[in-house]
Image (cartoon, helix red, strand yellow):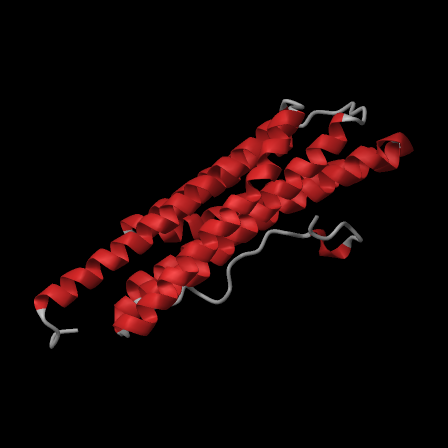
Length: 239
């Protein structure tokens, strides 16, 4: 926007910073929801799970606030080039964040059910997967504010490890179900939880891809190695 008065350009830069800050606020809520849902599962904490579910509407409200502000910028500022990419990125990123919040709430709901069912096997694999997902999510949200394309690439690549672990957990749970029919109820809920974590990883990767494009104007390769090999099985869809 070289022809615009300096004060207008400065004002628009302030608006873009506010937009990034709003995304960071929403991202913080989503990070907390994912962490709390995992802790509720691993620690059999029904009260914590209930709080995750209760706070999900707050995440939705933050999404609407960001969308309204971004649409206002589009209408009033009519940004172009990299400025336009930043606003479009914000609209898409908050959609991914909202979906991650939904998956966290789903995990919390199923953890409450699992608390009422006897489980005779370790949840350490799910705990490790949840930790990996949380780390990638934090990095992707940080990347939005830092505008670091290399960090975005790192998140994009790291999702492969999440997929690999998901495949391992999936096979283990299927084995438990085959060995003893009494495991079927608990394992079915755990399969949903594992799939929710895997989908959180996918949405986290989407955020990294969007950020990379907003920064560079270029897309990451269309093909990203996808480690989820469970499609050949009949298994639960997203919970």
